[in-house]
Amino acid sequence: MAARPYWRGQIRLALVSIPVEIFSATKSGAAVAFHQIYEPTGQRIKYEKTVPGIGPVDVDKIIKGFEYEKGEYVLLDDKEIEGVKLESKKTLELTQFVDSHEIDPIYFDKPYYVVPADDLAEEAFVVLREALKRSHKIGLGQLAMRGREYVVSIKGCGRGMVMETLRYADEVHKAASYFRDIGDTKPDDDLLDLAQTLIDKKTGAFDASDFHDRYVDALKELIEEKRKGKTIKIDDDKAADPRGSNVVDLMAALKKSLGSSAPAPKADAEETPKKKPAAKKPVKATAEEPAPTKAPARKRA
Image (cartoon, rainbow, N blue to C red; front, side, top):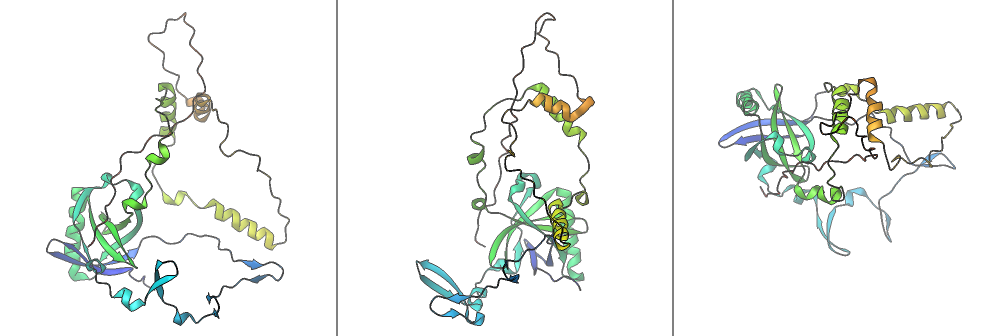
């Protein structure tokens, strides 16, 4: 069965309108789902919608309510909510174009595939796609879907285009509040060279199929063993500190990671042959402050 579009409407660029359909580009992974079970009987626990003093209620008589004061609600039915007029429900107007690297990846949320709605829309669709590719730009606009309005980006992708929803600025924690306690320590050149060599050694082309959810695999194996009645041995690792030692001999760790391919540390030009080099203290690895981000601002369509 063909996939159903997540959204139907048009992309508008100035006076040009392109009918399109949008499909979710992702799907749920092979997660292991658990139910809550009442252990004495082995039965699954059920939940009922209840009202205090009344008990279970008919789901057809449930509507949405906004609490404007404690215990006081404005009641809205689905037709009233759907009746909210917003142009971006049916039209994605591209209002700005930026270089893709100008937006920090932390703001990108969920991807969707964009395709022309019919053969008549294909010519304009292809022109926009190729213009975005040639200019190395992404288009920005706002789009209303499933009860909220999103900032979205559009870019060329193969024969089609990809739309990604973006988080608003107030949906992302400021990095400075987490990184402020990290010092201004400058890395030792020898350590930096070793780390760069290790990165180069492990550099390769990305292939998503190289990775899979090992936790799900382990859970499935555990479930199968329990199903067969095997006794499960649980390792007690509570005493282990997941952070490891507070002090790490970073030079030794990097050299060990590289094995025999580790480059020799650089010689100090100002050091005389007779001078004994000072002993290096163990060095802690530090994180870098990320590049300044550009956040999408909230707008009303």
